[in-house]
Image (tube, rainbow, N blue to C red; front, side, top):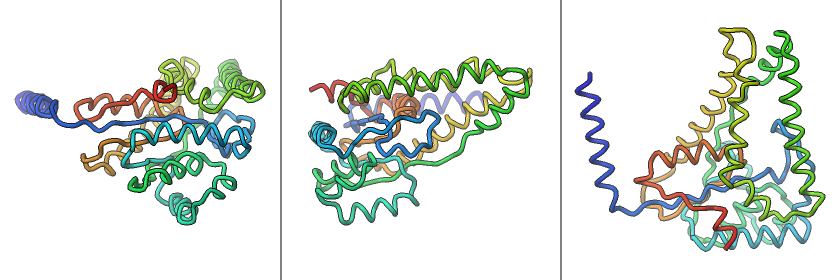
Length: 271
């Protein structure tokens, strides 16, 4: 077995060296908040009037910045089934469509597609439920009410910070620049493995670890969907998901730096 492992390591190293001179696919990973605000996330944000004039101008500028890199493929946060519904919207897309649908798939994804005739749309999400109800029950049944209260306090702080930005009129681009910094990406992933969650229940109860592993599993499956839709000939790919998905996807792409080059989104949005 040890010789097999050594052989695989050598073959992988040889493949990596051989690919160093090949063209890497540029990856634009954009984390966003959900424009449509369907209420599916733990944090319930107040509405941002995406269809009003100022946000529309900001989103247009955002899409122009991304279009400069001419992505070949546009990968979006919907599964294949949901994509059938979005494709109906795409089939009749016009300037009027942008005043009728606030979802970021339409506002950014389809707007970008309209600027890039040859780009293809791909729906690469994998929807999975997380056992949050079991986690909350475990806290409550184990005399760990303080963990539940601290967790809900964290959620409220995220909500309050977002809603404060809305009240202050912070632009869409400035919000997205913040959400795509390394600091924010760590901030959005860290709660899944926080002591509040890892310590849920008595010793031997792994509900906290199960919540975290299900989140990782969902995002690894998303990564699998993405990779399945790549043929290695793409010069640039644009991938847009809710911001909390991005840290894991970014990590997975970085593991394969011989194939992929991650674009600095904050710099892209600042230029």
